[in-house]
Image 1 (cartoon, helix red, strand yellow):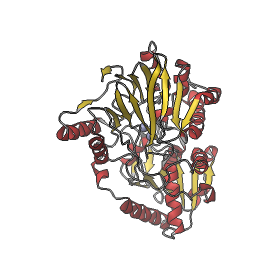
Image 2: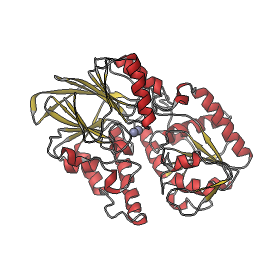
Image 3: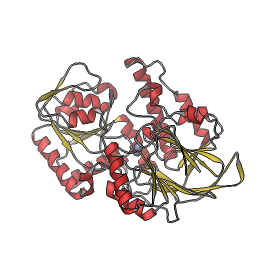
Image 4: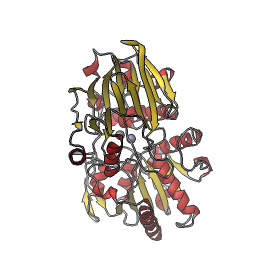
Length: 457
Ligand SMILES: [Zn+2]
Ligand SMILES: [Zn+2]
């Protein structure tokens, strides 16, 4: 068995890993690096150009896991593509949006190679995507393994709608690839289901390894804090901007705000969502019977909210004229996204609040805002002139990832002989996880993979 990361490696990036097992070549995730532009944001498909790729597995439909799928298929046209049944409803919406964003960036940032793929490329791949039911085994055969094959199962990963963790049973051993995973229940999605069978090699994410505070955070306390922030902002006739990933966090926050309104814990304010968030919410409704949901009679269609048209982002919309909640992508306020432009506009006014609720990476615009002081001037990436940051900025933790103790507990429960740590949020996140596992399991082999280095498993 061999493992070769072609993107991301031990850190978050264009997550994509090549696994050779029982003579078969499997590609685990095909992401694009959200922090980079152009060709540099792609996985290194050239590293496996001479290898066989029998199958591509997509753990979930976040950009850093699915964003380069059409390119992977262009490189390996004979590979079959597997994802969860629910993800097979989601990927086209997310990939079409990626094409639209690339088309905008082509002109605004002068990136000649954009778009890396077209709307047609996204439509064409629908013929080879296979959406599989969770917890159900399926057999796969390969070019060099036409007889025995391997047996695969998607398990519910808890991270977002459709997110799956992949279990592989092969002659050379068993592998469990977590993808992005969340052990605890969120508002809408149940916590992860781990496989009951033995695992030889565990490929685990460790995004939150550096976040000590998330270990002790109670959802109940965060909800109370969030409710106070909303009410204090509305009292000043301000609005609350919540930058959120369009898949997952947007729907979790929509559910929460709706719930607080229903319980009359906040006034009856307007709720606005950016366009992609609404398209994904419809898929939450559409797939309700097939997803591991908590509240399975809640439909976004029954909820009152309006969609912000991207052309209206810099105008004096209703959302700044009267107290409102605005849930807009992207979660890390990447350049030229709705949350980026809304923050740019709202930041100057003291009555507004920007409330971060999910993961933010070190070099993202969200960190610039989070780490800035009130009533100071800040420089937003991509904008020459500095901006006055007079608004309130808050941080609430509603993570869609396991906290670091949950990751270590998962490793102890699964107890593999080899552990491959991927998708670390930072150098510190990786170092903490390695040290913690070494303390409790001194004999466990731990691999922190570098992109382009092949590891014998
Ligand atoms: Zn994710
Ligand atoms: Zn991820």
